[in-house]
Length: 170
Image: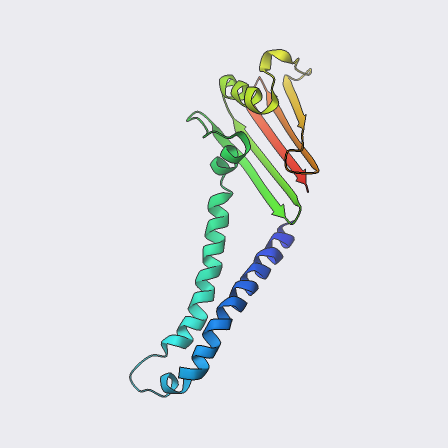
């Protein structure tokens, strides 16, 4: 999946460079001779042709990193900011075309898990029975915007560790 993500970002960069080239190359062709052969001045347009796509790629990676940080995934999944006591262990976010997937592992107090269950799964901690190892499992299948959309939350009462996994196909 990491390879597909990298290819998708590469395609976005190439599209962005193509759009940029539509404007930059004609400008370079018109003014290139004057800028190339002028003494004591750097060729700002050629530097711009290299620097702007590089900045574009760096901006894409920065936006992706900011949008997929664990706190952002928590907020997207549960529609509220994570409380201070929530400790994140791992996160994963993948969207390509009509397929999306999010995974989040975190430690949280039972009150936070109960809030998630009340708002997202329309149940509470008291409504379920743990398995032999103390894990509570909740699944919600819904399709507000997708053909198939499934969310699953597992909560270990002994370690206060939760794992959330969401998959959607359009």
